[in-house]
Length: 421
Image 1 (tube, rainbow, N blue to C red):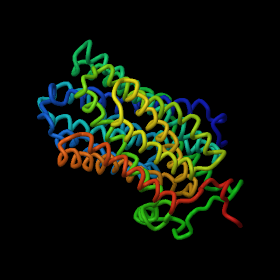
Image 2: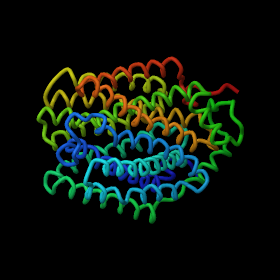
Image 3: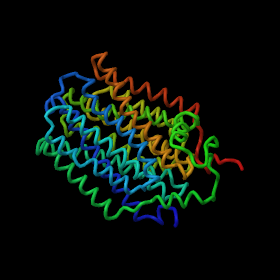
Image 4: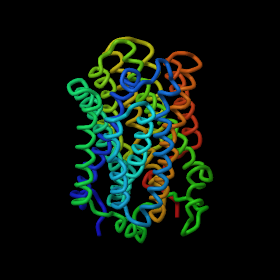
């Protein structure tokens, strides 16, 4: 049983296609739904807290399911968890199509959180199972590249479908096609990669990783949770950075469409501006993930936090398609630097025996950031009476979180900063 992208290329490519379909599924809920929340789904004008409710629900559910997925996959296997995630998504397009009120959208987003927590976790974990330690940055970079390019494409495609067929019919057609295709491909071609992880646990070649020492050989769920969350300062610094960076994505999801729609930008053009963020983020990760395999994870992560926050602030300093697209691209570059490499850093210092759980717990905190971030930017907009306050809330949070990561994190790459025997 060999580890490496080339040795497992067929399965690696199947998993890349899976994560692109995962990106399609969340992307269909991003451009059209927030922009038409008032006219199509009955959200009163300037009801910022109600508008953010669906992202708060998504973050809480997805974060929890990330945690569950990691631990469950170590018991029943990666493929079964992936199938459960796709089954949970089946009602989503129908609920959006028949939605009489915004509460149905919130309920559909709960199912979306279950889908994303189970499926995205498994595509990432499965790829890490079958690749080598010196390919982790590239592996996660390719995973997130595929997922977020899918997300960006879905936002643009559904914007055009909504214009041609109507928002409900367009989302129904796109959503059902995506989910049924993903289920079929999982059943026919995806393999369970848990045996690769068990095999890796018995290997001891290459530089020694700086695994935490204050954990037992067969740790409980609570033991791994406390280690990743606060007992190991490196893992805790990475986890809080993951949580805060999701404030940006919550802002892009909820308030970018509203901000731009209020300024007279059409739905397709909003799709393109938000798509620039997704395309730059997704496309750049192919390079930034591989970059971290050569220069390390720590500084790309810290700089990514600060650059991403700067891009958010820049949105408020100009007008027009070009300026807003440029600002979105800056945020996309920052996200590309930090996103795959925060996950790679977690994988670097998590033992194969409990790596699935550690990744799930990190992703729990990271995607809880959707809920906390959406709540925070909703409160900021509510009390100020404008969406601009939400942009400042997110930008400042990113700068402070990057500082925390810089102070308490360290380089985790086993080759660059190995454990001295």
